[in-house]
Image (cartoon, rainbow, N blue to C red; front, side, top):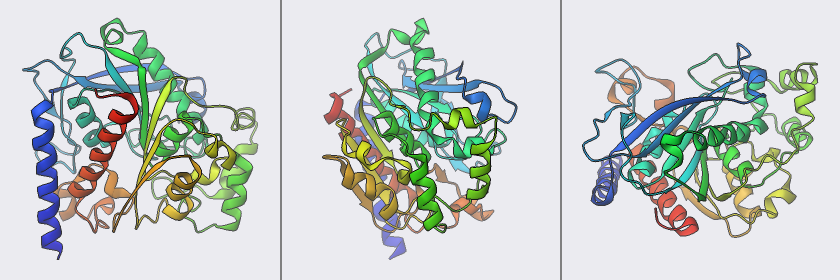
Length: 362
């Protein structure tokens, strides 16, 4: 049975590649930096900096380089390719997707998703969230002040809009948001969902073993540590703004993969969302359990699309684990019961169809 599933997954991935290749562009990649005042609270070195990666359709002949993660010649995660600082494919304005990674992840880790969107005609603006990414030292504020994530995306968008080499290629009348895990939370917040921090703390007090309440493997923070941080003189003034409106003006569609921390949203704000929303999640996800996270959002948000993938867990949505990663028993790669190619195919197919329907074809 496992062999049959592998064959089906490879066939599905091959079909996606073949379909995409008929209309695909090479992918360009550019890196920028911006600042966000709350970043200094979350960053281990108190820097206000937010790193930005922009992926976009590049001109034919662009020299794409591997984005795979790990030692040269023996990567741990297979991401894709992009051409550094390549010229844009043409002078057309392209729809824009703001992208948010999960807790402990990076923009590049989700390149399997973002580069395909760029191949298909989107400009993708992604960030490494301060204090919550795998390149820097993670922090308790980075882990717990999740409502500041949309502000990182908003700051990145403003920086890109001010860059003359990129701004002329942006169609900001077609602006979407997407993300994975805590990044799925970010996408929903960008679309208008608002945080009720007391509600989340009460939920975790009643359900301490729920996947989003338990200490995470990327940085183990207990609820007691979170409460102490929120009450500290350094964080308390910002915590008072958790329930503010953190939506991003102009977002016309939001796509969330395995969204987490959904219990932190005020239910009334979910039912008030008028922006089109699509959610894909794994039925076997213990980190962001569907019945307390993605499923809750899908039931509350009017006309939300929901796809549940049987047997799929949480880390299936990360970049593909290489044979070397499996041989070294990398923990994120050892609990995959469904081939990742199949999961990625389903997520990409849903996202491309969703954004095309919500904002018009790219």
